[in-house]
Image (cartoon, rainbow, N blue to C red; front, side, top):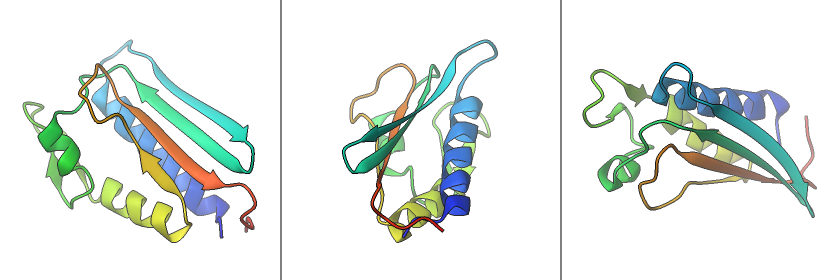
Length: 114
């Protein structure tokens, strides 16, 4: 079951992470699509991207990004992933390191929204 407050919190966290990963003047994009019986949100930034090691630890508590000073995700992405799982959604991003990061958040549209 989708909870609009939880979905908003998830999107807010992904946007916040994208903004933190980008430098001033770089683009951060949020798109939403209804595809068949699914709702898809795309959050894309133009930041540095993530290494394989960063990707493998991304949802761990207090993960830190390599060579980025104190920039880390604390508990935010760990909690975000748990909220997505509770609502039966999915979260994916490219496996290869590319400039920026493109999050793809997917929920079934037929799920009841509270």
